[in-house]
Image (cartoon, rainbow over all chains, first blue to last red; front, side, top):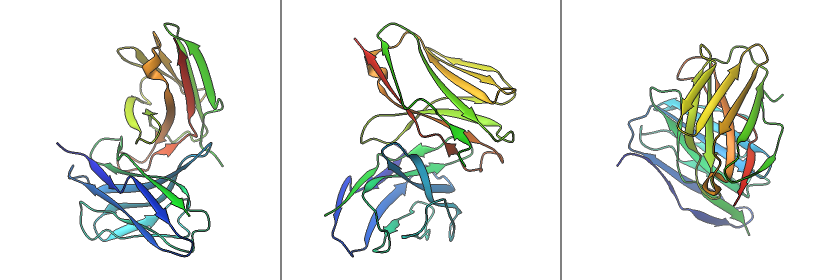
Length: 111
Length: 113
């Protein structure tokens, strides 16, 4: 069954730590996206990648980094430079159609 | 500057009645519009879409209307059911299927039994 898998579902980070959120898709989609959701803020684009080995900054890329070494995988690293990382993170992919397919999300909390 | 606006953060309707969720956009280049539904702690799921060459698209209880001159679209849910309670995001796209979706901030719909 094709889809997008995000892991872990819940993640706790200490101050000053880097953490990596996993996103894997088996839909054979070229484009992949990372969004952040905060209450009342909707979905804000962090990074996106249209093809392997290429990615672009979105609206709120500061404090985040990504890689796209494989078509199936688009991990997001939340670095210590991100001052307010507590949020719900969503990964999405896009094939030929206009719409996105989203993963189930990762809730990141700073402790 | 918000290109896609959902000005109502929340909406409450009675079960069986109509729910109308509104969305305004500012960019006349948008050529495709989508609605997504999101439950808490889950990813959004695609609900319905409309191309800019149409003014209406219907799928079961869900209908999306597009008024290009007013740069306005709306999602109608008839009849509303308690399971429709969720956050609804409006999204718009230009630049073909590989363009990035621009999302509104969402409207939280509560359908009361």
